[in-house]
Length: 244
Ligand code: PGA
Image (cartoon, rainbow, N blue to C red; front, side, top):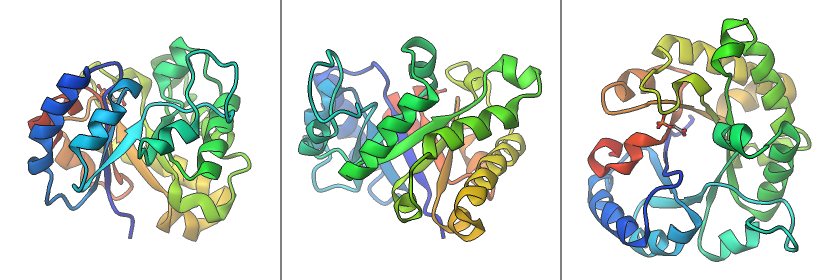
């Protein structure tokens, strides 16, 4: 019903030359993947990545997008600029953006609604910090972030939006949520979507990934959980064999 989606989040890694090398290795390894496969790469690698995956089953993604069409926004990138390069998916609201670059629920929402209107598919990240988890705030935080991201998103757009549940304490730390815990927490997010758009839409149309130290050792167990529809992979996406 919900096709799994595995997306690499390269973050600030890989030059153009490294992009060609990594994708050259990856293309044959995932050629018969059942899951949808996406690589989200730095802006400077988008062109090279697009060339390297042309005619394959790998789809192209970016790591952010601005809400304005164009203008005086030094360092930002527009949806049209990404679309012109063949980008299909875009990560929005990653915890590193929220933590280090002042991203808020409101700016996440602006990026999400613009991306959807332009025809890009957002991968919206939500997730609690360790402090929020220890203070029993997981549900409160996830409901707030999810409702915030989906403000003004209409039901017709749900097939084009993916959520990534990424507990901040599990990102790049080697600590993973247990498969059961990730599953149960994702159920909270899906419940929030059900409240907004109805049970059927939440069950059938919105894919929710797990992200946070997902790797070749734990992927099978995580992917076996009924609520987990894929992964957003950081560190392990930088090695073709691990990612595949
Ligand atoms: P990680 O990163 O797999 O290195 O923990 C995941 C992410 O931040 O998307």
